[in-house]
Image (cartoon, rainbow, N blue to C red):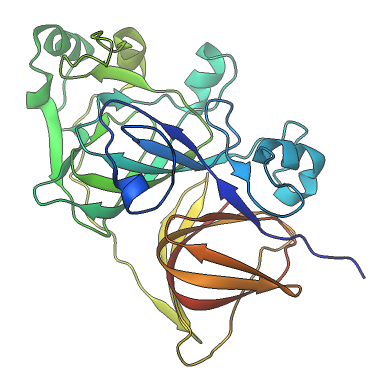
Length: 328
């Protein structure tokens, strides 16, 4: 009898961008010796921030190395480089992020050595009172008008700023000018890319007293300059099963994301697995639970990320926990 593939608990790489805070260490117990801790790359095969397997036979190995050894874990996405098509992060914005834009796949392939572009989704885990984000432009402008506004520091009057609350979600297509605002704690699901073109950074300086690099020429090439419709929260419908409820957050050609609420107080079994077609990723955003499989038990807590290989063991989930369930 063929053994099914076992889930992998992941450990992230941390990033110390100047706008970050302390919440990922204080509230998610990341135990990463970085201050500020702005991002954790929870499920990543990107060389700029790999995630690592913790525990089990692959303990301490980069996820990309495990996937090179076992490309079948990726299902239909398997490749010899061990590269996943998506990247999952936690983001703690104590201060405003830069105003930025990402290229699409076509532009990135042509001008960034064959890399992927970056379309992404944000799920708001928490937001302080008054938190906002930038989502596109509040009016249509020309490329020259945008360039002039960047040169004379008046870009903010063209930015569409949107108030945010806990449990909101936003879909950011490549080409959309955007920025996460101060006070937001966010889970981000995106294409496997680290291409960011900064338009504006509030004239800030880093810890060395230097301004961060801007990428205005490239940003002007890829930015959508028409007015953006104000983002509205989509209708979300919870579907109930024994011991759990699930809702679709976002579906696009790159990924699907669901929110899964598990409560097994009445001893129901909640069963979960990935089929032969593709891997899945579970990101624990609140609560705690145990995943049982093949006479083994994995305890998971707020902030933990689990890679579930294609054709996985059937997992039995017990506890009270909220998970993001990401699929490709």
